[in-house]
Image 1 (cartoon, rainbow, N blue to C red):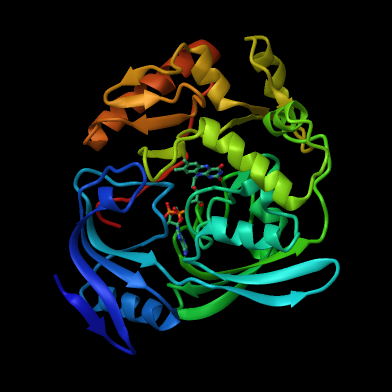
Image 2 (spheres, rainbow, N blue to C red):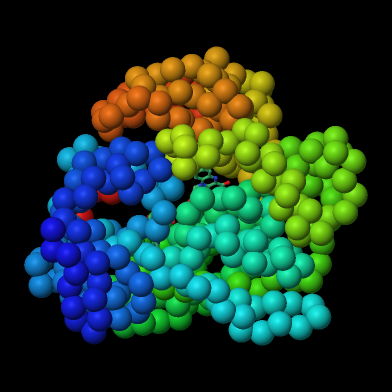
Length: 352
Ligand SMILES: Cc1cc2nc3c(=O)[nH]c(=O)nc-3n(C[C@H](O)[C@H](O)[C@H](O)COP(=O)(O)OP(=O)(O)OC[C@H]3O[C@@H](n4cnc5c(N)ncnc54)[C@H](O)[C@@H]3O)c2cc1C
């Protein structure tokens, strides 16, 4: 145990920490070092620390979308624990807030809803940190963080400079961004995220399950706090609480098919939702369910009986078990529908 290291100030550094203890799926062997980042000075100090020891680095927030391998990580995990929400400007129509990357995402949602601002209320209770939100462009119940991002502050590990990236520079798509795909994957440590929220109400029709809940409860007030309360109730009724149940949320991404493939997919009885860009979206959870896997146990994992996209780690201790469960699900879906499921959570490579 190194305890704390002092450059500009003290930063907590731990050695040989199981990745399982840092991630909501609770899998993964030891990380050689774990460094807790509380401000920009720590970011610089952490990369210096790694460089001096010739270590690879891996950035982590809440570990809610991250899987560790059995062999662990032979480098330094930089845990983003810098928090705070700063109001940049506020008027009758909009609120601009700058949120530190380590701030818990749901704290930001609650902050906005309490002040009556809309834009992120449907993304209530998504586990993890604000700095990770742009990485896979989080979304739920009809909202995506891409709709409200203004810019991010980041440390560019290539140039070793702090930079600001505008939304137009982030290539934000469905679970796909400049931060998680392509040449700049893992290049930036996001230190802060600035969001623009509106004094407005979401308007119906809502995402199917949200609409059904609002109808059932006869709710006609669509204020941000009402929508937040509804979304929290829906999520609590069907998604595992990461504090109590090990999972990484949705384990597979929804599948997109090109315009000219839609008819072929529909001919196999698969419902395809047409998107504005002409592509078709297939609900991956629906396919898993149709394969008879909902509620089934596979190698220590349980396919959630309420949301079939969620794999719950009931008693698996090893990544190898996850690999077997994943292969079985992917194969069944491929055989039945001819479509290939892609994993949503990222994996920490043993060596970068
Ligand atoms: C029960 C459950 C429900 C979920 N529901 C949803 C949902 O509805 N919608 C949704 O989109 N997601 C959902 N997720 C996934 C997860 O909550 C999100 O992906 C979230 O953004 C992860 O945040 P994190 O801080 O835990 O990220 P981590 O898992 O720590 O990191 C995820 C990725 O982001 C990178 N990263 C993290 N922080 C930074 C940073 N500061 N700078 C640069 N890169 C960084 C990491 O290197 C990694 O590649 C769910 C997960 C769980 C467990």
